Amino acid sequence: MEAASKQKVPLQNRLGIKGWVWAGRYKIERYLYTLHRLTGLGLAAYITIHLIANGFRLGGEGNWTDLMNIFSNPGIKVGEYLVMAAFIIHALNGGRLMLQHLGITLGKPKPPVYPYVDSMRRRRPLIWVMLTLMAALAIYTLVAFVIGE
Amino acid sequence: MEKITFKVQRYDPDHDKKPRIQQFVIPFKHGMTVLDGLIYIKENVDNTLSFRSSCRMGICGSCGMLINNLPMLACHTPIEELKKDTITVKSLPNFPIVRDLVPDLSSLFAKHKSVKPYIIAPDMAEIEKPTAEFLQAQGQLEEFVQFAYCVKCGLCMAACPTVATDRHFLGPQPLAQAYRYSADRRDGGAKERFKHTDTHHGIWLCHLAGACSEACPKGVDPALAMQLLKRAIISDSLRLRKKPVPPSVAQPLAEKKPRVAVPEFTIKKPGAKS
Amino acid sequence: MREVHWKLLQYITGIGIFFLVGYHLIFSHFQSDEVTEWSSVSSRAASAGWFTFYVLILIFGIYHVLHGIRGIILEFSLPQSAVKALDWAIVLIGVAVFGYAVYIPINGFIS
Image (tube, each protein chain N blue to C red):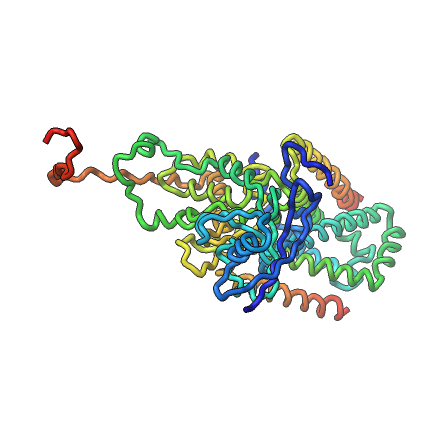
């Protein structure tokens, strides 16, 4: 084993990117943050591909029709549905975050009395409403637009 | 007698390149806390185990650790409440490890100091040499008193996903304290704190994961404080923030009771004049 | 502009995207295949209303995405000296992407 240096530097112990994804036995709000980030990055990647695909229009009808034939693949339809689901999750969760960032739905501070319940847990019903809406929209989209075609 | 297994993170900077887990099996008694278990290990099994503790009643914030994957105060965590036969204890994440379960909290204190966690009043003479009490209504006190219960244990910083990657991010504790003082009507330093927190590594890197409030052992709810700070900064930037009226100082009493003379000493010193 | 102003724009573009992209997803992606046929695409390209719609989506969408990515990059302990360089890089990428993307509806509108 190496001998100790005169000035011992404490060992770095940051969780890093792993800390974004999973960090411990936290409740649902902590993992909604992870979901918001993942859906945001997914949508950003999709938009990049979408803008490149739109550029095919500049090549005229032939180019465009060839591209649409590729996109009529059933696998692409599944991908489009996932994009729609990511949009629903990111939009509804983003709306909730915007309201809570402005302190609108979190309530007022009050002196803590044990057992402590923080503002986000007191507003858990809002999360349930949001998740129900997400699930309803995701199922409706699946039935109306994907299966229904 | 029942037994309980402790899996404790060990790290000796003189001998270890990275932390390792050491297992201890110790007797369990009803009502035992995680700190009691660690003290038992230190006193009876391995006296090289290092950890911080002081008040053992959840008020000093010294014994913050990662217990079964959640930051908690060891003295405030009864083993029975964890409902497990094996207790895994590690040093607080997002802080460097000095040794075993001892984190280096200097970054927390430096960030806390940077938000000026003290009253900056227009009339500092009254703050430094008070003549009477400030007249603050109960409602005005309740605007910030919840956030004044902070014991600087660092559990919120350990829970925060932004602190996990960004060492420049101020973090839940300093930002909550920035709001605590800005919301106090005796204070006039809100703009100075807004300038410091409305920056690249300031309040806007909080994405409301809420883990800080979940981990807080004193019910301080730093997530709420941070969102209220965002609201205050937004309304200040749009010039919608009403400047709070500072509380007045209590007036001296109109009638004063006669001062009672100090009684003579009953036991005279040798050689003193009677 | 302070950080708070960029964040307010993030909220405003988020609300805008909710309506604009929501309509776009329903209209363009989940209708029948006729919507993506060349004749339908060309007729929309010649419409002033659709042109405005696409330009707005691009402005709101590009700002919202790039501001979000900037926030994520800042979380990697970016030093103060690199923040200005990041901001300029984001602005240049945004202008370049907008320039490329807006050329498509402009081309369709003019021709």
